Image 1 (cartoon, rainbow, N blue to C red):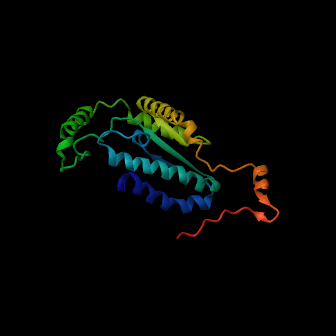
Image 2: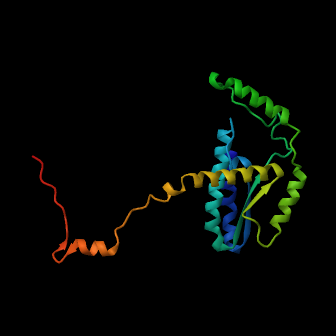
Image 3: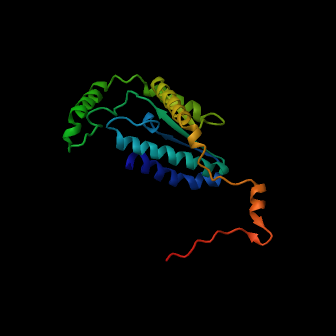
Length: 199
């Protein structure tokens, strides 16, 4: 949380006074595909990225009147040092119920190090390109694997929305038509049903 969420907040808080004064600027933050969907044994990491997503979406509305743009970048897997032994820390405390699956996940991460398909240099160039545009995108999905993930997330959200769309749309207060209300209101005022006092 400190690195992925609080850190970007603190940096942004430091530069916003300058950007507001000059009435321009671009705040670009690096999220992740974990900010679009959670994954097994990535609960804390995904929570930090989902928090970052919500913060950036809200921030966009707050700073837009000052001519400040925001861009959220959702990279897939790039061949950085993220999965190296020096950069990766696994919790020492284990829970027996999860150990078998946890061990498999750890082996996957270790084996995937150095095999990521994304080239960090290409990503850097892409970020320079979009940041140089007159109107940078509010979101940039970075990497073919990230695009595939985003498409699946969008399809799943649509499916979940449609599955209970009718029920979801029926939850508002039901108001009586004005004609019925007028009939219920007599010359002596609205009809009020009084409860009999309990014995």
